[in-house]
Image 1: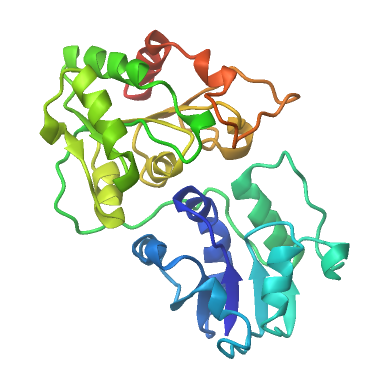
Image 2: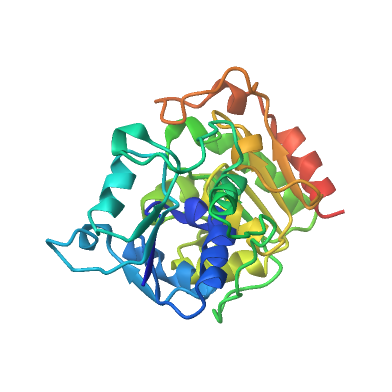
Length: 304
């Protein structure tokens, strides 16, 4: 068995797709197990090639005996994630070098590296090719409307949430241009989604609460996505759906859409020399510097 660890969220999983496929291709006859949250299973299914999902608390031998020929850390630089995989007693560990975890044979960690290329480089170090452009996902069979413009105002941390009134201003402008606008959000973001819809004059049924599989289908068939730097933006990249992504504390050079795809527009007014606090309590100044008129202009460029 080959065991890979990527125990984070939607965007984190989407950026590891090329690396997961590289591991799959390198061990065609082996069972590939992915240690990840169970709620991500619908998205893992859209990647293909993963044989089983393992909860992270099931890695350690005391809970479940896993016999891994190779354990691949696609989660972080260590030491905690290295030690979690080492607890499974794999014959080999592929991971970035970390002296604290006693793992020295991996490549050095580069903080400012793009997340997709980071994990491809890790595999290249161990002689496994991985194509950083291989980001596509299968389109799920989900009953969702086609051709909508999605506005997704939520994000995990407050520092990455553009003000609701500005999203509403964008929604009003796009509606005036003929877009069918819908507002999406997770279960915990429904109040925020309703606020944006109400402020933009949209009816309550324009607020969508979807499963992860339905959300992927909605993005795959959408006309345009506008969101902050959060997981849904990576779904737009996976489906080549035109998008405008608003960045605040984190640079698009690390988490943005790949270069050479003009249908994906990243807006950022920060500096690479002054990284922000992605977990800060308030909206990041770089995000506040973005105006609705700029977003609407980029939306036109994305779908041109």
